[in-house]
Length: 166
Image (cartoon, rainbow, N blue to C red; front, side):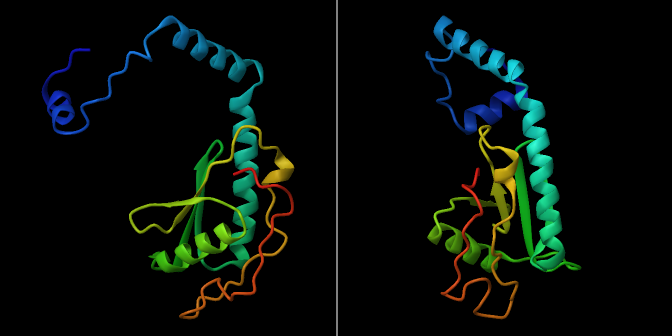
């Protein structure tokens, strides 16, 4: 590959071991083509859009009763839930998000946070996810934002209705 100017400068200052002999061989190309065939044959792009849209619609319904949810956004199967302590000012709820992540981890649900303030929960369900798995939990954590008790009371158990797909 030949580059010039700002691309070359950026590359030389950053990561410089991105080349691989494994990515440009006939076996890798055949595997890639097989994956693209499955995506097309099983209509996985439309399926991911349909399930992702449903998940985000359900989360937006949940946001009506959960004041910490400031925004729900995404595309396809990728969804971000932004937590804020003040919806008007859009104040990041960084600590509450961290507490929620710990609570979810305690209940065997592994998700990550994103964003400069680490207040966006990122959900990335796999393509095997089906619509009924994208529902909301049976019990939601309390919406309390009182200091020292955001989401975590020690006795809460948030178990999904079905096996989560994210």
